[in-house]
Image 1 (cartoon, rainbow, N blue to C red):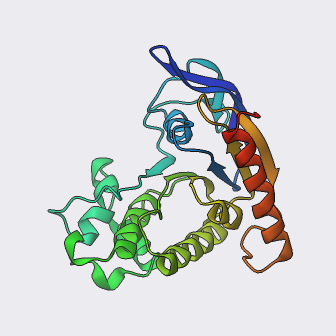
Image 2 (tube, rainbow, N blue to C red):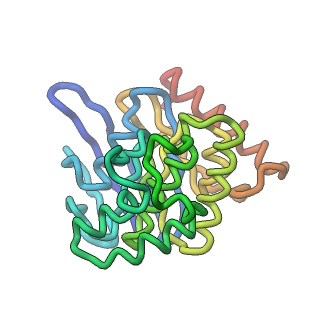
Length: 241
């Protein structure tokens, strides 16, 4: 689904990413971790076609990345809900913009477990419920690539784990390719079949782990991978990339 070869991005004289390379097979998940300011969100922007790469090659589904790719959905940290629209209207927003039938929004709301809240307003929802609306809005479009930028960072610990479980269940059902940016090492290990560790700015690849412990917080392999990712992250912070 994604092929990145020596991808770099700079704004002005500041280099945000340098020589980032990885492959994401179709239907798999990739978690991206790294210190603040290392270019994780920038990488999502490049994959989404919102930013132009400065150097290198970036392909999505075999073609050079383009803005407004219909199969790519982006979920932001702040949920991006419109306060003057109901839950259902927010979930159907992308469909209406593309002039598509809105029935898929109802199915998506059922899939994330909040169909009974369809007539509520965003201010009447908890943080976890708002995040479910954002996920439903993305799923309604039937994406083959889902990009998520720190989607659960504002949630309490229990709600965060609940949302991680929901995302994992959706991925197992739909087999949508997923790129997740997170500051949480345990979240990365729980959700990422691959884990990309970036160094401090300019973000470079410190390591890329294949993760057999995805989806099992209690496995010995999970705790071992958490330690490996933590070691790689410390290496990147200390300039060892």
